[in-house]
Amino acid sequence: MESLRELYKIGVGPSSSHTMGPQRAAKKVMELYPNATSFHVDLHGSLALTGKGHLTDDIMIKTFAPKPVTFSFKIDELPEHPNGMIIHVLEGEKEVNAIEVYSVGGGSIRFKGEVANDIELIYPHTCMDDILKYVEENRISLYDYVISIEGKDYEVELHKILDAMFESVENGLSKDGVIQGRLKLKRVAKSMFQHAQNTRREAERERLYITSYAYAVAEENADGGLIVTAPTCGASGIVPAVLYYSYKQLNIEKKELIKALAIGGLFGNVVKTNATISGADGGCQAEVGSACAMGAAIMAWNYELNNSLIEYAAEMGLEHNLGLTCDPVGGYVQIPCIERNGYGALRALDAAMMAKQLGYLRKNKVSFDSIVRVMKETGQDLSKAYKETSLGGLAKEIEL
Ligand code: SF4
Image 1 (cartoon, rainbow, N blue to C red):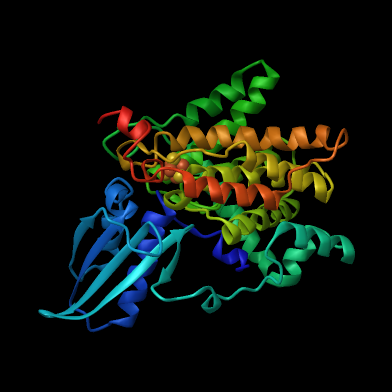
Image 2 (image 1 turned 135 degrees about the horizontal axis):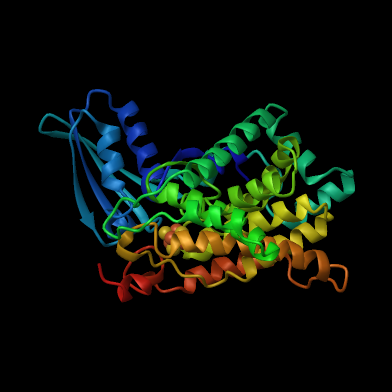
């Protein structure tokens, strides 16, 4: 598996595959061709169908600036992934190269022909069964396992990621107004948070807090604010919400929360390695489903559950999001995405609570690795209309 540094990335929304990935691709091409005078980009598949709403052209224009760039939107897919593009590099009138590049989810990119062997795979294990067996045999915690591979200095990075996540929650909670784009969606996280502070009903208060935190980040993301991919931009509200809730409402210190963050990342990395975290590839189960599994693992760790119960919580977090479709209205990462982050955060909390109870009553028969395989197959069976194309579902139902 790749480093967690490739999973948690600080950047701007609204979409890791449609903004962060193309931004990285443009930067790389600029480095490779300093003498280029202009560019033309063919956006294919999902990048063509939802690129406008996801601000793909916008971020590429800014990245290539001051050099000019033009676009063609082509709905056919390139062979290696639904999010493909060809960047034509021009020097004057002459095309010096046409580079095929794929945005494969979570802001990661792959140039054509680049195979898995070219990527630095620093983890010796690729599935959760093997990781759990290894930590049990060596009597170390899942966190120690992560640090033994990422290095002690990764703790500093984890603190930075946690702080960036908390900043995105606080930024979102402080803002009113309308989110950019044709939906004219009003921000509601701040009001929800105020309601949580004022309500007398305790059960409602806790759930409103956590929902408002998830909304805060998802609204920031939709508005092009600074967020952390967890594992993607579209699903970036869930992990910060459970962490901020643990910090503010459960009084868990940051030095403990970075451990939870690393463990959540480990589960996300297993999904990324064995299935997909890209909505264009697997539907929203790959984004919000994966984030929910990560959030559930985080909460299970925070509740001090053992490794098999942490796995149980994460498994539930993904299992009950199976088949979740990606059908963003107008191509904006707003409806259903923002609400779905709130819902996903609550589900993560519930999964940890249920694992805590159920795990002592009977053994879970579904492993995390099994559910990851099922998610991958389900994603392959999903119609393209439900994989970030805005051709079906809510996107078809709600006209702008
Ligand atoms: S529906 Fe889910 S996968 Fe699709 S853009 Fe929204 S958050 Fe991402």
